[in-house]
Image (cartoon, rainbow, N blue to C red; front, side, top):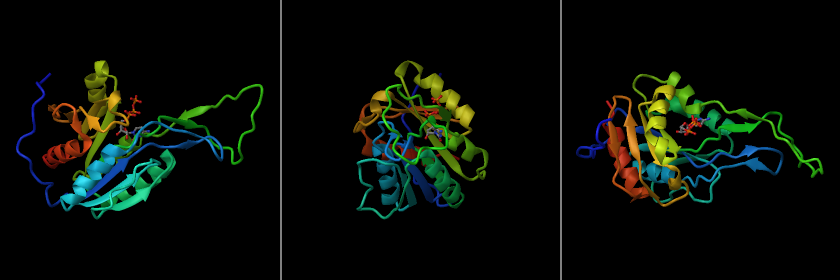
Length: 228
Ligand code: CTP
């Protein structure tokens, strides 16, 4: 395995790739009219990436899930909200053809209640309740399979430290993306991050240790700009 190294001098995203699509935050998969299956993602990293891209003058669209954090207000960017994996899938299908780079920071559910979802509140029952879950479609992998050659896709992998690298390399191949940002689970819902970026060409570049997500966002955009 190559030693993790720092990226070379910062560059800007090539002018041909100026339209950035960023997804951020958790999904809520409805069980009934009032309950959902959720995860602990805050969306902070994706929000910082979208803000940093917009400050660089890139045309930026942020697809933001149900989170308590607000999208940035001091930079010009387009924000659209999603709740479920199905909403996000629909937005990505519609918007991806008009973008050049996808940064898929959203924490997409792996399973959701099998349809049809109850439209009423399921009543309490002494027998308990069994939910049947179905796997969600792999949105990133699906998009990668139908992208143009000039489009760049970056995914994330949230993993326990002992299988971080192995899992990131596997996801890189399975999803067919240009890079995977691998970060340990403690990063979830935190203001700071330690991460390594695994590239399709075999490079593995570690970010500076334990940096703020704002700092990391700038660092990552410099790296993404170098993808050929
Ligand atoms: N992702 C996606 N669609 C899903 C699940 C995940 O597009 N249904 C994206 C995430 O946004 C992230 C990347 O795929 O950029 C990796 O997500 P992760 O949940 O770590 O990977 P999975 O494909 O779900 O693999 P596993 O659960 O086996 O780790």
